[in-house]
Image (cartoon, rainbow, N blue to C red):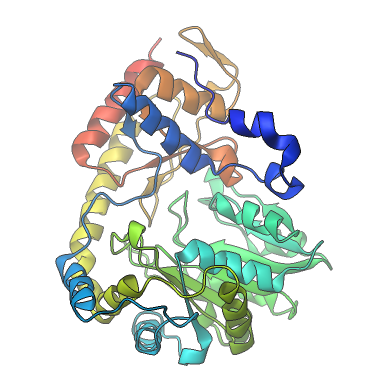
Length: 409
């Protein structure tokens, strides 16, 4: 069975009638792979999906209870564009409790997922031709969001030898007169790497030399870390007024479908994001907002059982992948992904299939092992693939056995 996950006949046939904006926009690689996996499942093929970053836990009961109460209390009207005031107060308390950050409610904007939060920030800060530095590997949508704003996504590369982190020297060499924004994500999707307080302090010394550059700090995985305490870049005094802190409920609270994200930012940026959002989606879902208050006001210890399970799965998948010749691994310190370097397979034939790059490799795994993963090309790291361990131990074991058998000569 031949699979081409990026062929979209609709766009091939109708592309000349669509805007250049949408024709030039890349398809989300994670969503494309997930869609193909679902398509194959519907054909009766037993696909193990390790492509999406979606926890397999149910939303905690105390959060669901708050949502049910909101329905009974007749929360059903349009919400304020930037979020309910009492939710924004809860977010301010959370930032203070967990991150040591002091925000007022006029610095908070609640959005329909952290993705919208990021898109809002990029739209209000970036002019056509501005450079936006993406610390690679980076989440797949960063570059597309920058392209939509007519900015230039510029990668700062890293690899497994540096634990997928950049150095101050690399950052400094990447900055030009056109640089307006840098997007950094810790804990990182896809590598699982976590920047320490010391590392952020060293990077901030470079940024202090360039006061007109802003930082979007994506901290969606902050609670999912294994041994390295989470540190918010905005906690550094020189960075507070230049940093937009993005967070959300999807990952740590198993609330992917609830679509809640938020920012803490300088007031003028928050107001601009509210203005932008007011013309795109308006306010976020009322029931989800009420549930979010319960989630954020609870102690992070309420979700520790999920983090503990992710850590067990991390140990399991690393152990199993190390048994496969050709996989080169680091040890992720956060999130729920492994990001192996599989470049040793490039140029080789595996059971009649020529592997030229990471995309070929992921397609081969889907065709032969029936395991969905994601090519590192989409994350700015073409030697790697991303494998999510936000799945049960049983599925992980079964998937890695399949991969191992598919790669045996």
